[in-house]
Image (cartoon, rainbow, N blue to C red):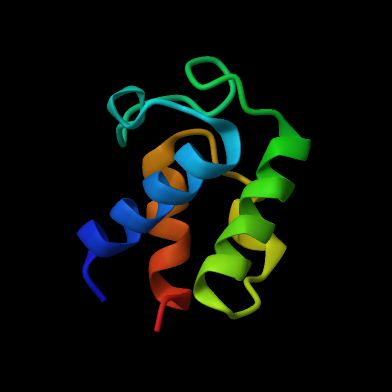
Length: 80
């Protein structure tokens, strides 16, 4: 799967779930410091992605993520 598709879908769900401006989301943004997302927000993001994709995602995928790119890289192997 292409990283651009994962990133695009992730950004779409982040905009929808958190009312973020798409231009404020980029791979180098810190989830907590730049986007103001805490651990509970990441749970909401995970559930939003699961609903969007109609599949379960292992929560451990988000465990060590600090940057948007970390989420993309962690999701990529599970994206089918």
